[in-house]
Image (tube, rainbow, N blue to C red):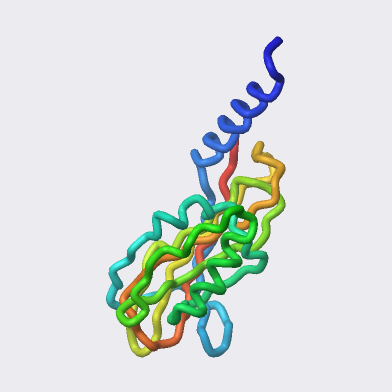
Length: 180
Protein backbone atom coordinates (compact mmCIF):
# COMPACT_ATOMS: atom_id res chain seq x y z
CA UNK A 1 0.00 0.00 0.00
CA UNK A 2 1.31 3.47 -0.91
CA UNK A 3 2.01 5.88 1.93
CA UNK A 4 -0.52 8.77 2.15
CA UNK A 5 2.34 11.15 2.94
CA UNK A 6 3.75 11.24 -0.62
CA UNK A 7 0.63 12.80 -2.24
CA UNK A 8 0.39 15.34 0.59
CA UNK A 9 4.03 16.38 0.16
CA UNK A 10 3.53 16.70 -3.61
CA UNK A 11 0.44 18.88 -3.09
CA UNK A 12 2.32 21.04 -0.60
CA UNK A 13 5.17 21.57 -3.08
CA UNK A 14 2.69 22.52 -5.82
CA UNK A 15 0.95 24.97 -3.49
CA UNK A 16 4.20 26.64 -2.52
CA UNK A 17 5.40 26.80 -6.14
CA UNK A 18 2.06 28.25 -7.28
CA UNK A 19 2.29 30.87 -4.57
CA UNK A 20 5.37 32.35 -6.15
CA UNK A 21 3.46 33.09 -9.36
CA UNK A 22 1.77 36.37 -8.45
CA UNK A 23 2.53 39.02 -5.87
CA UNK A 24 1.03 42.26 -4.62
CA UNK A 25 3.74 44.59 -3.30
CA UNK A 26 3.06 47.16 -0.62
CA UNK A 27 4.60 50.62 -0.69
CA UNK A 28 8.21 50.40 0.45
CA UNK A 29 9.33 52.61 3.29
CA UNK A 30 12.58 53.76 4.86
CA UNK A 31 13.16 53.28 8.57
CA UNK A 32 15.52 55.76 10.17
CA UNK A 33 18.00 54.36 12.69
CA UNK A 34 17.40 57.32 15.01
CA UNK A 35 13.63 57.77 14.98
CA UNK A 36 12.33 54.38 13.86
CA UNK A 37 9.85 56.18 11.58
CA UNK A 38 8.89 55.11 8.10
CA UNK A 39 8.66 57.27 4.99
CA UNK A 40 8.66 56.77 1.23
CA UNK A 41 11.57 54.71 -0.07
CA UNK A 42 13.84 57.22 -1.77
CA UNK A 43 17.15 55.57 -1.13
CA UNK A 44 20.34 56.76 -2.75
CA UNK A 45 23.89 55.71 -2.12
CA UNK A 46 26.78 53.61 -3.25
CA UNK A 47 25.89 49.90 -3.48
CA UNK A 48 28.18 47.73 -1.40
CA UNK A 49 29.46 44.38 -2.66
CA UNK A 50 27.29 41.63 -1.12
CA UNK A 51 28.52 38.13 -0.36
CA UNK A 52 25.87 35.52 0.40
CA UNK A 53 26.74 32.96 3.06
CA UNK A 54 26.15 29.61 1.33
CA UNK A 55 26.63 27.81 4.66
CA UNK A 56 23.67 29.75 6.06
CA UNK A 57 21.27 28.82 3.23
CA UNK A 58 19.86 25.74 5.04
CA UNK A 59 18.69 28.08 7.82
CA UNK A 60 17.05 30.69 5.54
CA UNK A 61 13.54 29.59 6.52
CA UNK A 62 14.18 27.58 9.66
CA UNK A 63 16.48 29.64 11.83
CA UNK A 64 16.17 29.70 15.58
CA UNK A 65 15.90 33.52 15.66
CA UNK A 66 12.52 34.11 17.33
CA UNK A 67 12.21 37.90 16.98
CA UNK A 68 12.13 40.30 14.04
CA UNK A 69 15.52 42.01 13.72
CA UNK A 70 17.65 44.23 11.49
CA UNK A 71 21.22 44.26 12.80
CA UNK A 72 24.86 44.57 11.84
CA UNK A 73 27.39 42.10 13.25
CA UNK A 74 30.87 43.62 13.54
CA UNK A 75 32.71 41.26 15.92
CA UNK A 76 33.46 37.56 16.20
CA UNK A 77 31.71 37.44 19.59
CA UNK A 78 28.51 38.94 18.13
CA UNK A 79 28.75 36.50 15.21
CA UNK A 80 29.15 33.49 17.52
CA UNK A 81 26.14 34.64 19.55
CA UNK A 82 23.94 35.13 16.48
CA UNK A 83 25.09 31.86 14.89
CA UNK A 84 24.17 29.96 18.05
CA UNK A 85 20.65 31.45 17.79
CA UNK A 86 20.39 30.72 14.05
CA UNK A 87 21.40 27.08 14.54
CA UNK A 88 19.56 26.55 17.85
CA UNK A 89 17.34 23.87 16.28
CA UNK A 90 20.24 21.94 14.72
CA UNK A 91 22.23 19.06 16.14
CA UNK A 92 25.17 18.89 15.80
CA UNK A 93 25.60 22.63 15.53
CA UNK A 94 27.71 23.57 12.49
CA UNK A 95 30.60 25.99 12.82
CA UNK A 96 29.80 29.59 11.83
CA UNK A 97 30.82 30.63 8.31
CA UNK A 98 34.16 32.44 8.13
CA UNK A 99 34.01 36.23 8.22
CA UNK A 100 37.05 38.53 8.37
CA UNK A 101 35.75 41.13 10.82
CA UNK A 102 38.80 43.35 10.26
CA UNK A 103 37.55 43.99 6.70
CA UNK A 104 33.94 42.72 6.68
CA UNK A 105 30.71 42.71 8.65
CA UNK A 106 27.42 40.83 8.45
CA UNK A 107 24.08 42.54 7.79
CA UNK A 108 21.16 40.51 9.16
CA UNK A 109 17.43 40.69 8.49
CA UNK A 110 15.20 38.26 10.39
CA UNK A 111 11.40 37.99 10.21
CA UNK A 112 11.06 36.22 13.55
CA UNK A 113 8.74 33.28 14.09
CA UNK A 114 5.96 32.80 11.55
CA UNK A 115 3.01 30.40 11.95
CA UNK A 116 3.58 28.47 8.71
CA UNK A 117 5.76 27.99 5.67
CA UNK A 118 5.67 30.27 2.63
CA UNK A 119 7.43 33.24 4.27
CA UNK A 120 10.81 34.52 3.08
CA UNK A 121 13.10 37.50 3.52
CA UNK A 122 15.84 38.92 1.31
CA UNK A 123 18.41 41.67 1.61
CA UNK A 124 18.29 42.91 -1.96
CA UNK A 125 20.95 45.60 -1.66
CA UNK A 126 23.02 47.51 0.88
CA UNK A 127 23.80 51.16 0.14
CA UNK A 128 26.24 53.53 1.86
CA UNK A 129 25.60 57.29 1.87
CA UNK A 130 25.81 60.30 4.21
CA UNK A 131 26.97 58.33 7.24
CA UNK A 132 24.16 55.75 7.02
CA UNK A 133 24.14 52.18 5.77
CA UNK A 134 20.76 51.31 4.22
CA UNK A 135 19.70 47.71 3.69
CA UNK A 136 16.90 47.17 1.18
CA UNK A 137 14.89 44.36 2.83
CA UNK A 138 12.06 42.50 1.08
CA UNK A 139 9.68 40.36 3.15
CA UNK A 140 7.36 37.95 1.31
CA UNK A 141 4.26 36.45 2.94
CA UNK A 142 1.66 33.97 1.67
CA UNK A 143 -1.97 35.08 1.32
CA UNK A 144 -4.45 33.32 3.62
CA UNK A 145 -5.67 31.22 0.66
CA UNK A 146 -2.22 29.69 0.03
CA UNK A 147 -1.57 26.05 0.83
CA UNK A 148 1.63 26.09 2.91
CA UNK A 149 3.31 23.79 5.38
CA UNK A 150 1.85 23.88 8.87
CA UNK A 151 5.19 24.32 10.57
CA UNK A 152 6.63 27.17 12.58
CA UNK A 153 9.28 28.97 10.50
CA UNK A 154 11.77 31.78 11.17
CA UNK A 155 13.10 33.27 7.91
CA UNK A 156 16.47 35.02 8.00
CA UNK A 157 18.95 36.51 5.52
CA UNK A 158 22.59 37.25 6.32
CA UNK A 159 24.99 38.94 3.90
CA UNK A 160 28.62 39.95 4.24
CA UNK A 161 29.59 43.47 3.16
CA UNK A 162 32.75 45.58 3.48
CA UNK A 163 33.21 46.89 7.02
CA UNK A 164 32.06 50.37 7.92
CA UNK A 165 31.19 51.96 11.26
CA UNK A 166 28.10 53.90 10.15
CA UNK A 167 24.57 53.37 11.51
CA UNK A 168 22.10 50.95 9.88
CA UNK A 169 18.74 51.99 8.43
CA UNK A 170 16.42 49.84 6.37
CA UNK A 171 14.17 50.39 3.38
CA UNK A 172 11.42 47.84 3.86
CA UNK A 173 9.32 46.20 1.16
CA UNK A 174 6.57 43.70 1.91
CA UNK A 175 4.88 41.46 -0.63
CA UNK A 176 1.92 39.18 -0.11
CA UNK A 177 1.60 36.60 -2.87
CA UNK A 178 -1.59 34.88 -3.93
CA UNK A 179 -1.99 31.23 -4.78
CA UNK A 180 -4.19 29.25 -7.08
